[in-house]
Image 1 (cartoon, rainbow, N blue to C red):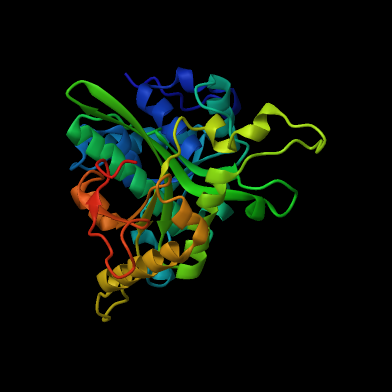
Image 2 (image 1 turned 30 degrees about the horizontal axis):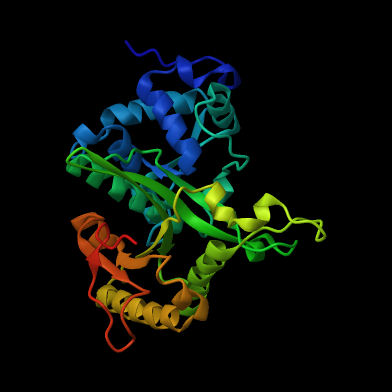
Length: 336
C-alpha cells in the first residue's frame, strides 16, 4: 500500500511520514539541489538500472502533488518545439526543504533552489557534477566499496586567506567534496576528493588559477584578529579542522557534444586541455613546492564512467617534468 500522502498540507509533511523511497528522494534533492529523473532512478533503484523508472515517476508525482517537489524541462538543442523531448529536472520547493530540515537527518543548508536557478546558465554544469558523483557510487557498488548517494556534497567553500574581500577571492569553492571508502581484504581506506568539473567553458588559465587556490588552502593558517597575541588556531592550517587528510584534487573534463553535422573533436580538445593544465600547474611555484603534499589528477567524465576511479585514467599534474609527462596512473596507487 502506498503510504505517501496526496492531499495533506505540504508544509506539515515530514520526510519520516513518507515511504522510504519518497524520503530518499527528498534528501537527495536537498543535498544535490537538482537531479534528472534518470539520475534519481540510478541512485534510488540501482537494481532496476536498465528499466524505465515507472515506480519512481509515480513517487515523484505524489511528491509533486503534495507540493514538496517541483520540476522543469532540461535545456537542450533545438528550438521551443523540441522542449517536450527533454527530460524533467526535479528540485525541492520551500515546503520540501523545510520537511527535510525538520527530519534533522542532513546538515542544514541555507541555499534554496528556484525555477530560475535551475533554468540558469549552470544547469548543464550541475547535472555533470551529479554524473561524477553517480559514477563513483556505481563503481563502488560494483567493486564492493562504500560510496552512497549522499557521499558527495556540491559547492563546498573553504577559506584560503584572511581579510574581507569578495567571497570568491577569500575562498576556494569546490564543485563537490566526495567521500569514498576503499575496501580490500578487510582493510578499509577512507578517501576524500575535491572535485572540479570543467566543461571547457572557461579558459585553461582560469582553471589553473582554481588549482593554484588549492595550494593556498593547503598552506593557509588563520590568524587571530588580535595581532598582538597568537592563538592555537594560528599554528595549524585551517583545512585540518575539516578533513583528516588533505583531499586529492580531481579535475574531471567534459565537453558539450558537437552540433549536427560537425565532426566530434571532443577527445582532441580534452587532451589538449590536459596538456595545458599540466604545463601551467608545473610552472606554478607554490604547487611545485607542494607536489609531495598535494595530489592533483585529471581525467574525462567518459573515462571515469567507463573504467572507474581505480583504473589508470588520471594524469597526475604535479609529477614528472614538462618534457616527460607521466602516463595516466591508478588513482589509488597514486596516493601520497
